[in-house]
Amino acid sequence: MSENNSSVNADQLRQHVRESYAEVAEASNDGSCCGEVASCCGVSDDAAINTLISTRLGYSEDDLANVPAGADMGLGCGNPRAIASLQVGETVIDLGSGGGFDAFLAAREVGETGHVIGIDMTPTMISKARKNAEKGNFSQVEFRLGEIES
Image 1 (cartoon, rainbow, N blue to C red):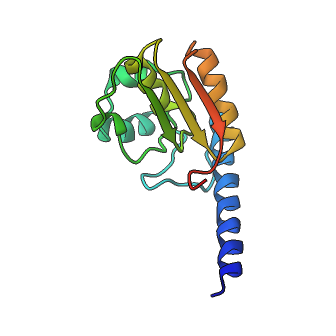
Image 2: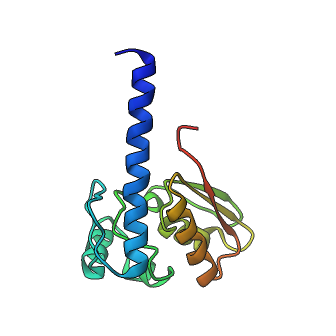
Image 3: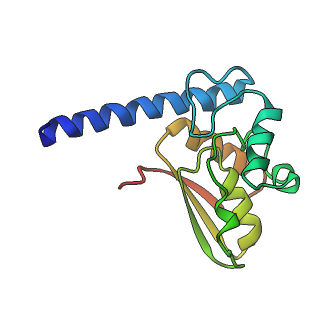
């Protein structure tokens, strides 16, 4: 396959992922079904299933209770805080931040003197995360549109 065809296919795939995750974010906002998207761990519009997925990844009930509603959409495939030793005042970058779940948990650990930057390639997710940050008064968290590979 030529390099040009490879780039086109990558762009088409990236656009499909953007559209699919936008569908998840919009459905989550509306409280409706999440559509066809699935992460490696699955997707559900049922909060109990999302909680089960998150607790199996090592998140505590306290973690789930201390983020804005809608930040945990059951899209995660790992718990980065389980291996990170975040310290007060640090800057954290969350790649593929989605609705901001891990970014908000990291913000609690780095405190008001720290900074958390969430990066996601889906404009709808960025919008959702920014609204969640505002709802939760997370002034040290910001979200930026971007592609991880860039």
